[in-house]
Image (tube, rainbow, N blue to C red; front, side):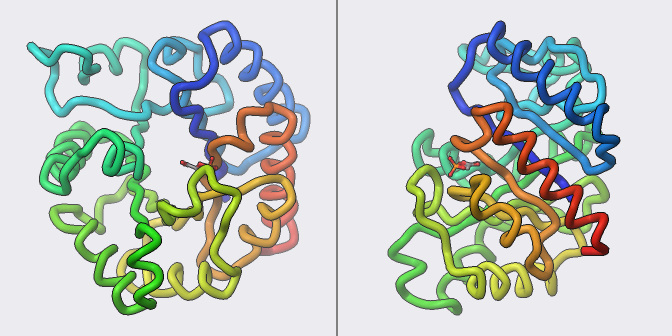
Length: 238
Ligand code: PGA
């Protein structure tokens, strides 16, 4: 299983270090072999990577250059960052990134050998049109994306489920993940209002290989609990 925490623009550098200390001890004390990734804000990327991968929430597709307010390859490399989130719904819908630009980022960071967690997901009006419309929408989010890329993880995150407390039914998650599985052999994460109370049943679904958690992962203890659930599922052969 792959269990990820996306901090977004939350937590200071100090808070991130304190958080990481809790999660690192939990992972080593419990011999967790599942992959744990934390995406902190840029200011905290310098935390030393021990038994947890640290990923960047974003990156500009250049080595360096005149891109005010952005962070590029050179700065990520300095911190040993080799994992990046691309296509998150907040980048698409709040920051206005186009599929063309997202695909450009994907190509750039894939060429540099980054592990890429690539996010897709539909807004509510598309979901309401039914599953065919939904898959057609997601298909467009794969334009320019190499689904055969070796270090790829796909996260299915319905826009309307992110930060809202709403989630699709388990059956719907399974359905979409089944359709995604037919397209790629990359591990498939579910994201959108995952929390301690629902993580186990979601991770237990077929073709769900882990979770990408925002708000509920801001508590180190809750995040550890979800890691424990992932490990238990793995131990039980799921
Ligand atoms: P959420 O966010 O868990 O707060 O819904 C998930 C995400 O945006 O990755």
